[in-house]
Image: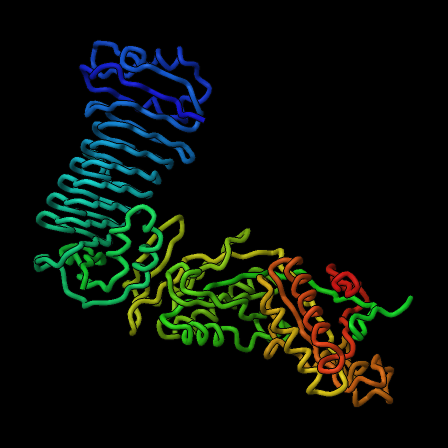
Length: 269
Length: 301
């Protein structure tokens, strides 16, 4: 069956809060009811009907034809078993606090994508902004589960305060990759910026090439790690590059010893 | 009723009586097949019968590198006991002493089951705070640093209360060699059956027991009705042409697995024929009052 379809009529003239347009919240609603939902964020009221042509479809799946970097909070608090596809770009906080489900974005995502996501599989075919998976200001933990794959590059502080889950960046990562990470796994297939794993407590950061890591990471030698093989097998369907990287022998640098120091940076040996 | 004869082998009008058990299982992997088998063999040692051991355990099957979670050769081990608590204790002790210590090994849950046993969760402290937890696909693993690298162990292992223990076949032949030929063929067939193990040495018991004894305080003693050297002296169950009896005891994760293993065993014995193999197949029971599972041989041929 076809998904519930939102076709974008024109570029929005203000930032939109699309958190109400997840399939789990739209179950059983008529097209008219959906068109009446207010999605504006300013004093000018904007409803779904003003911007989108709505076509009803399958209850578990939503598709957006056309995107914009003003599409904020898309897929927020998504529940397991539901899916969203966006044929275009999205704005800030994609999949914010999602509990599960699948979100695919054909274009780019803004900052705070997968922020505090707790279990969703989020696949971004373009680039993603800063603070991928990170907490908003004042929040303690970042992403706490699920999987995020960015086919392009990400901005600064990717995986900030990551607590659990896996982030795969197939392109490059900005500065402070995995900063303040509590635990979890971050894999970068391209190049990473400065201060990798800054104040990393227990997370595993996997890089595709050897590089200088500063004095707070200590060399623990090259090993065949069992868990890496397990991850390689699990990640193979989603990212063959990440799977290949984890299949090989890895040099382990333990750190960040400036803090707890039970984390690690792994690079091909 | 005429006796049931298949290809010249007599099948007793009897049934195996089996009991409910708690079962658990792990997949043990290693860099090579040799060391995966070594770990599995060591952890299933001294686990023939719950009468005297902490559990009944055995190797279910070998797994190729393609079939294991971490892409290395592995072995599926099943472990049975009378209560979830005893199974948990036996499994944790055995993995701690026999698999953690075995070079290159890693441990994964063999099935999900209705409940969980904390395996990695109770073994992680061996890492003395250097252990690292990793979660993927809804499962959690512990990486415990050891002298040859890391011991990877799944935090929890599945447990099922639907297991059955005590399915059995009594294989009777003219002499030791021919009876053993039939028994070995049957054991091979039981091994090939998924979710079932034969926990005794090489899958075979030669000292079948009866309930009770002439001595005070002994709960079980030799099954004299099936001892060929007592054939004339006791109320024997053996015919004139039987000079040796061997038994296969089968534990399975499900009642269906036990039935399938017994069926496969009988089929292998029958296929061998009475000239090279056994002349008669029976089954052990206690009159049908003790165990709720009855496997009638006539239903399995």
